[in-house]
Image (cartoon, rainbow, N blue to C red):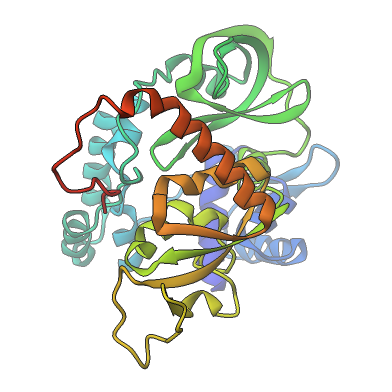
Length: 361
């Protein structure tokens, strides 16, 4: 472990003129005291490394010192060839550079590791795009990436989701994040972190003003805080519902984020697996072979606001909200408004002779 850590320190120092000891400690998940001991060990072996104290101090190598390190392990070599889908690199204009870099890495690998690395690139594929997301809007990252890499402020014209108006903002970018096939700009606006979907940026221009980021905040820190805001919404409306057994798998895929439980599959006490027949006689998977269309499973949900329970209407009669009464009333109002919308045409339309069009699996 120590030899790997010493090698990591050496590689990090070769990429930067000076690295603070606390940053090395954070990256390598050790204490600052351990970092200083490692620096002493490197110095003892003849590596020209030194530490500077003070506010602008850090750990550095003597100018001009380089070492050619090619001692990758087999697992490290394989890890380099497990890459994301090409779309991520294409958006940044790096497809050609990626292929060239991989060829260079392959040539530099120790000969015994090359077959495993090459096989990994053929057998493992990471596709970051989710199923059934529809076509993605074309994204031009040139201006945004220029602002990110030149540390300049950015002026954007932006359209928020569900809003037809546009807004002009001046932001301080931290960087770009590709999340499940969608690009986001992470930036501060008026000193507060904010997330912007790149496909909603209608216009962007790099300014001459230097970026004004909060001290000590990196892209990873800003992204983590924003990600939590999106995922950890307040659960103010608890809902109990029952789901037809035959639709449970698609229900979990769509409603999973609102389901209670560590795996997004119902309440943590396991009651979501309790089966009941439509006639109310009860039963379990252990003592009966249930009819998927006549067997129900109780689930526990939590929505941020009452109106969000309308999401369940897409399942039609395959999902019934049991409580609270306010949630049932909200669904009744929504169903009534939809029924009224189409009622005028229903008497003139011929009855469909085909099978019912249920939600696709």
